[in-house]
Length: 91
Image (tube, rainbow, N blue to C red; front, top):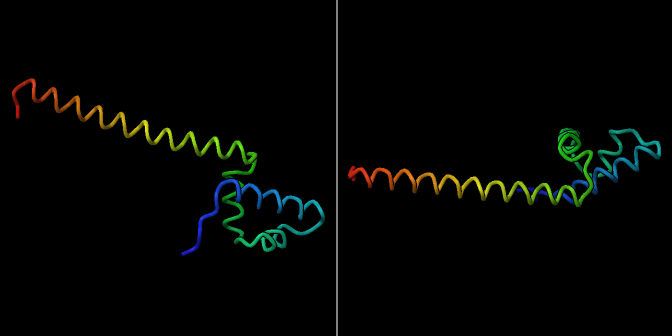
């Protein structure tokens, strides 16, 4: 199973590809040099292209916090529904 690079590593690889391209290499040669498929490169470029590594880290932290908060809301909503049913005597 392939290891999934961290967002900071992805940004570094994209930056490395940008440097190679600016030095005159073709995009396909630069993609090959950073060791990913062209599909992966363009997916990374779409997702992380305009971000700096600290922004990527912050975005991932916010996504994690968002997931945690969504779960907490779901749990509280379920608790509320259970209590409403119990207060009506519908055990």
